[in-house]
Amino acid sequence: MEETISLKEIGQVLKKRWLMIASLAIGALVIAALVSYFVLTPTYQASSQFIVNTKQNQSDSQFDVNDIRTNVELINTYNVIIKSPAILEEVVQEADLAVGADTLSQKLQVSSEQDSQVVTVTVTDTSQETAAVIANSVVEVFKDKVPKYMNVDNVTTLSDAEIASNPSPVSPKPYLNMAIALVVGLMVGVGLAFLLEYLDNTIKTEDELEQKIGLPVLGSIAHITEEDLPKTVNRDVSPRQKRGVKYAQQEKKTV
Image (cartoon, helix red, strand yellow):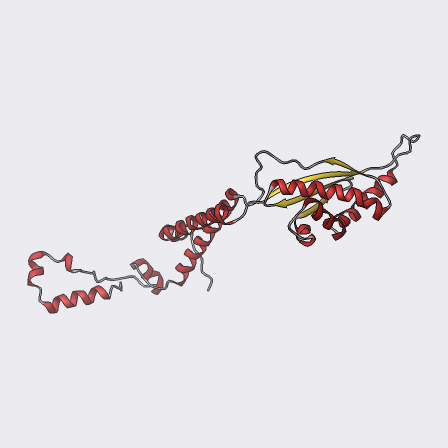
């Protein structure tokens, strides 16, 4: 039989488990902050751009659309050449890097806008200065090598990568990580609260008992602890009666 849960019951579950939900959310927030600030290594990016020029005849002032389309198509080939060992090994030597061509390739991103002749070479590294040096070296080596491989000379540097005085890391982003962790912690806490409530089959109130058996509750047995007894009466209680009270405390059940 399909069971439904009202908004009031949802609110009661959240109110009942709010401490656990808040603890999980705050715990996730603190862990994300510690990992972002003390575990993850900051990384920086630097970009250099070059443009694939269309050589025009001095007497021809009109742009040839076919030439532009050909250069745009060549950019895909240039992207592959830039990340080839022939280029990157030369970059490793010129920049005196302590990594190989394979590792350098993983730090390199080559991209271009659609139908654009401008290519952007982006390098990610733990040092912003090293990233800028690598980006500029890649473009310079590519410009020197591409006439040999493609028999063309139509690449011009558009902008060099610059070393910022106060660079900001691109990763990690502590505030973003903390916000994501807080939301995830809340979601896990709410989900866990409803799971615990679903698995909890104990009956704690008369209302729950009435809903469970479908019959009205005619009476209940109150729990009496030793502290509830009057002092005068408590002194007259025999050890056997005290043992009965302790036994009743262990059997706290509402029937």
